[in-house]
Image (cartoon, rainbow, N blue to C red; front, top):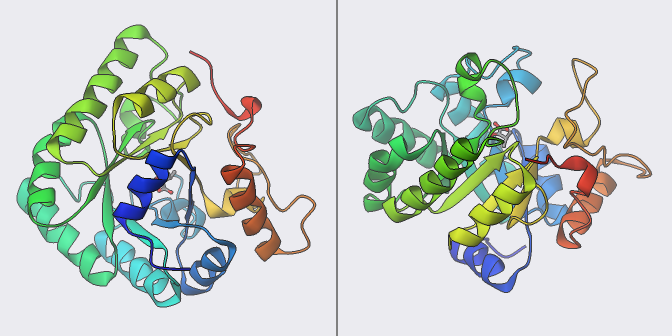
Length: 266
Ligand code: KIV
């Protein structure tokens, strides 16, 4: 696969071709995902749950993230690597810059921060220093204790208007990508239309610019035995993991995944 860059992702949005993203935490899966044609590898702090067995992403450290980013980089074959800044690793601008430096030096091409318009100053500082930022809106798992659980966000009018305004403010501040998690399908579509930067969805319907799933979820692996409604098990009908990764890429590109049953109404 030729090296995917931010320019590639922007041109996919312009062309209306869906972007394929999966979480990835090690070299072997990075290689397999690239072979299947996955364009963006997200080294997500979901590793705290799926690799480390915690019940939230809060215990994950910057050192954990840098270790997994470096592992993914070694197996990568041209995908664009996005790394999560973990819980409390971006509380001040100074801390944000120092931790982003560690993740970029480990091999990331972009960092992801969870929040809202309050991140605008950090996003601006990062852009000025050559670090593209993706902002994760909607259900932000690092705030699970404020949100009171893993729930759909933006169902009420006031919340929806705020999320749309936050998306626009973050684009203006220099954000290079947005990720919407568990957001009603109509709101996600509206946000993707309102900004020029790529908008990736997870539980946000098919009218956004690309899709992401947690690798273990789409392979049908779960510690709890429960799967969120927006997940599809791509192992079904496939002989092996490589087949499942390929089926995911094909389904996202064909806009067959997510189907209506994977989305949420307002
Ligand atoms: O950490 C992660 O894997 C994520 C996805 C849920 C999008 O942020």
